Image 1: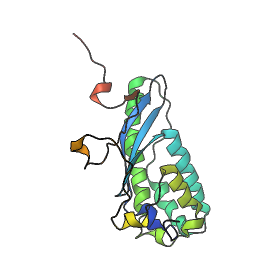
Image 2 (image 1 turned 90 degrees about the horizontal axis):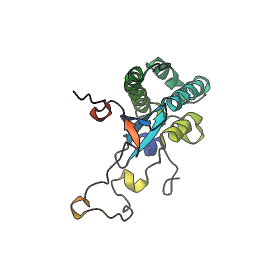
Image 3 (image 1 turned 90 degrees about the vertical axis):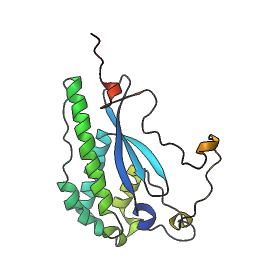
Amino acid sequence: MVGSRAVTPDDVFLGLSASIVSITKENYKEFYSYGVLLDNGVDQWTLHKRYSDFRRFRRALLAMTRRCQCQCRFLYLPLSTVAFPKRTLFTWRHAAERTAVERQRRLAQFVSVLLCLLQPSTHAQTCDFAACAVLNLIIKFLHIVPRTTMELHGHRAPPPRMLWPATARRQKPPIYTIRENDIVVGSPASTRLEWY
């Protein structure tokens, strides 16, 4: 429930957008993590997901949409035709980084198509939102918190008190898309410098 009414697809998906803004590699780990920045017009949040998380999510999503009885069954065809990156075996570092950058592009396309299909002008309005396992899977994967009625009408509850410099108090707090101690892939800082 949001306020005094049931949660609707508008509370969750209206204006929701996502972009993959960073690729990081944890120190001493062999896997890459993708920083997904989500924005619903009121709040922004960042998730860090591995390729295997996206792959498991896509497989579960396609299996559910193939056999569901609600309007989500119409998601199957568009989502199954979006180019999704293949699993590859990394043999050397540069190929792994190149593959990670290519995956970033395709994963971003997959998430964008998914969120476009869930906008209220499409099927989400007619789906039985409370009982739909497909929509609940998407909400859980993207860590979506429904907006409140006040937020939908442009009024926000006051944010928790934070100590920011006086000049930055009117600005939103920064969103950090890179975790501490991660190595950033595809940036000038991650390239090896050659001294002559």
